[in-house]
Image (cartoon, rainbow, N blue to C red):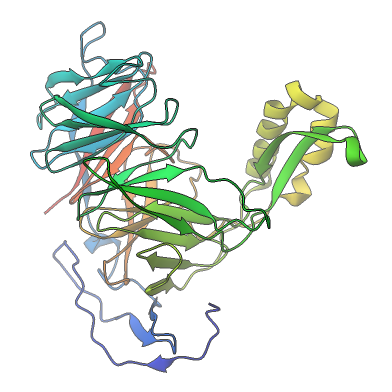
Length: 402
């Protein structure tokens, strides 16, 4: 639905869960109800704190980096899960192993192992809820459940080939990204997630529509009907759709061509839209050229450098940054919209929105949080895969300070 639709104002006071003390702003988000019944929340200024001095303070409180050669040594961390007792589960690679650490960072155990038998996996996308550890292996089209002590419980055939995050919602329903055949009419319903109970029984499949079509570069050889496309890549910094699983169930979506975030319990519906005032920031020419050069480097082995440069043109790359880069939702229901990484790549900036959709403000995390994978947003805490000066991986926990 267009945000220019006429709507009926609703005079509601919003209770904001700003976690830091100090001066509170007088600004409140405006809440309106559209004729369709969708709630729209608009923030013209931060509503959680008056200025940066009173914003949430994020401090590193734990670093997990076992000694080289030890059983818990991290090689190539992937997805991360954290249970109710603060234990940290890391899906490591090379070899595929799920390594568990207690709340102090001490190594506890390895769950499962690389392979094709029961309780084994070749690729592990993980999530933890209560006493359940869910492991999805898109390479083997299999989803498995362990308990958090490491005991294998069961597995079932699910989906192959879609390498993306999985989740368990508050009703203990698992969400598995799924490849579905294109309908005969060629009209895709969008991205699909098949839902299962943790005993492996099928619940349903939810679809999230592709609400806008992002622009892309197509690298190929030949012309006309004989042309063969070798690689398709989105054009850097062009507006795109964002999608993240919500811990309470369903999805949070975003369109970063403007500041628009959507709460969608079933993928094809919308219950809430939230947005904030925003001015696009310019992207330096050198940064834009760097992205073009990297794309040419990635495509040149397939199509040749000259052909790659004919496709990847600097003029196609926007001169201003999108509203946000990625979205995450923490276990408290706050939405974190990541800013484009600037010249300082050692830190990450986020806009934080309350569960009610109000923009609390902007915070800076003093680590380079990975854009995808290698991260977990918990209760007042972010867990992130990082590397030290020697390139050795570690997991750090960043807490919102009281």
